[in-house]
Length: 239
Image 1 (cartoon, helix red, strand yellow):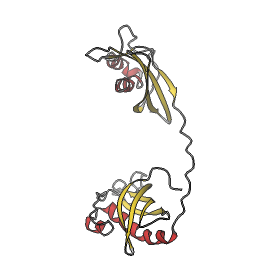
Image 2 (cartoon, one colour):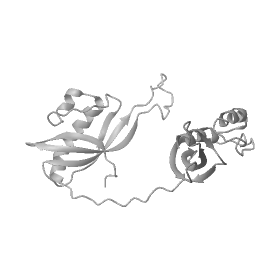
Image 3 (cartoon, helix red, strand yellow):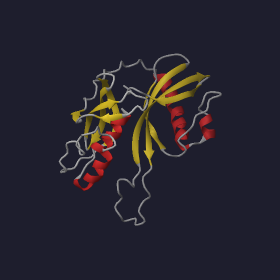
Image 4 (cartoon, one colour):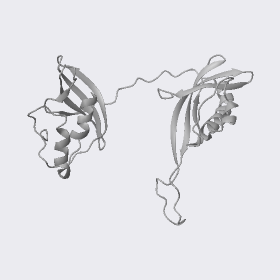
């Protein structure tokens, strides 16, 4: 699959200006006797990015068809590549036939999650504490962060890479002293340096942006205060 992905990186990017170079690079992948351009007539342009191994189907001990996922413009596509494996100690591979571009499968239909029974009292208690936690988590205030962590716990932080922009959503299920809660956080993403001319129009890349991210936290209550035990990606969408 790695061999097929390397091949795809060369095969899927072509233009007339690079035809000779492309043929030279493709030669490292092709079985003897195959066309140097693998069926391309030398006209037109194509470009692919985000090339990744996707799937493989073994035909027999020496032959397989590997699928590679890639992006071209706004389209997500697959490239099917026939591969021959020598089976000897050298472990050599070769592209043994013409590839085929195919549409990628549509996104999976994800069932709606069951809404948990929420604890409004615990949510009200946790919200200001988690706002403080995320602010120090973004800023990299180690001493400040320790105020929100369970005893003996430590967490790395963003160290100022983002600024805390708000707690967009908090889901606290009914439970005991230890809960798994989900939070949607708004991070403020720094832009480029502002232009020296204050009258100049600000480019979108120069302005700070906002991005929502979802987290799952393990929290535990000690006395009348909640503490964070762990933080990770939330997985399924909140709500």
